[in-house]
Length: 474
Image (tube, rainbow, N blue to C red):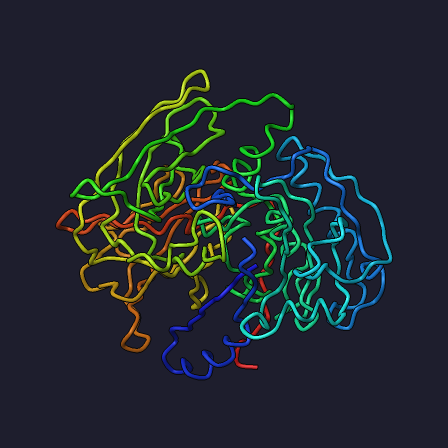
């Protein structure tokens, strides 16, 4: 799992000290490729997936042995099995779990040994997965597949050089969250543009936002729809409607790498997102009947082209192509009926954005990770970014795409943190009736420009207790 997290503290009297302590919380894990799916070809025609719905997985004996980098007493094998079970419940798949004395992932040169292994052993081959820029990654997944996209083997290894736990101990990676993400790659999912999704490209350590990093253990709707698109619904009946179309610019040329996302019209809950291919085409599948709002934004926010680069596949040319920046556009509301496909084509204007939030946060810290919140609670939320002109905004410019989240009027404050980033904070109140899921912050300037922080808040079933006595100055 690839992760690259920036955190900041805005209490000016201790900003520099806190910054260097927070650097210790910076997370990194892998490009092993969300509802952006993985593809063999750049046109996105051939999906990478298992050809059978029963997938044989081997658990290395290292999972039942004490490991120097995993807190003593951690339930390693239990974390693995719970992570596998979450994906099984989401789609028509079943894991045939077996045990083996194998310790190492297959080398790339070998072409694979046919054993799909989950391992935590610090062997030479496993350590080679975490050299160079990969040294800070929490886990990696190595896929072997044919030209037709059939996965023949998928190996997962946790980084022997990083610290893990299952109880949320400060400054460690959560073992179960890491494994849940990597199993998504094992199934053929790419990274997601929804920052609250399990398959988003970054993972925070325990202690970020003064919370335990348990939220990614639970699959977001985007994760669920992605795996169902590949393997069908858990009741084995393929169903669900789709929204498909093409995004072009003012000249009629295709927009490559634009993020199209949908949310429920009534609740504002995020449902799914997808990147456009090089021909501008997108498709969001597995949608239940209902009304959805559709939006499109450039890939220049919290998630960037760097998070999708791979040596092959549908997004291989994303970095070599100029990033098409444009202002976020609301494409309107569509209705899915009888599991049908709705066609929605759109043209964007090439005006450069003047408001582009790229970070959110809590407790004086900001990052590119969604904020876990609980119903019936109030929070001071931070939002900011490079080129984010806070002086132009008031709480009248801010809203959430949900009737269940209220921004308290006149609660906005501006914060200074160097010259490269502008940050505001404001107070929100969460209704006790809010459905579980991800919700987006909307910013609308006085001159009508629109920007979103997609999936800024996550309402989760996972308990995220804070560190009430934690001081980041220690």
